[in-house]
Amino acid sequence: MNWRDAALVVAGLIGSGTAVFHGVLVQRLMVRPFEAFFAADKRISAPIRRLVPLLLHFSTIAWFLGGPALIAAATWLGEDARLATCLFVGSLYLFGALGNLWATRGRHPGWMLMAAALILIVFGVSKSGS
Image (cartoon, rainbow, N blue to C red; front, side, top):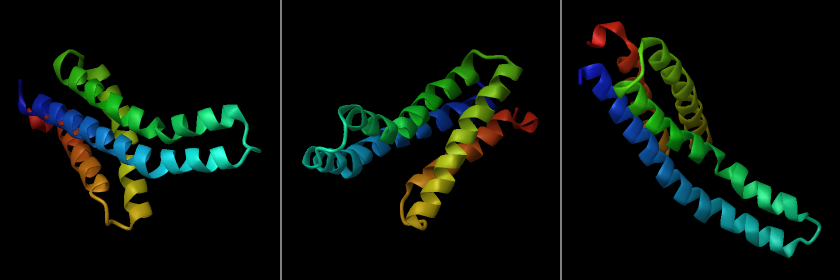
């Protein structure tokens, strides 16, 4: 394993780890309060009550799956597939980092972790990192 591969593996571990922590926080701080609100308001239909928690966890799932994708890119995929995977996962992590930075005004470590993963992804796809 070279440095480029190691960078992608570490980026994947950071991204998946951040996603797990994010999922716990989303469940505690957003899903549970919404469920209580939905239970109190009978005008909200059952499909909406089922859909909202899934949508709140969508970013968690995407970030978590980005981790194994980066690890697979580092260990099994060719250069073109590696680049495509890194662009896709990197764009998810970039959106997460910028959204977290903006929403929390920088007072939450999530954007820093996603930014660190992004830096590692850029290093992992660079030609000079070998």
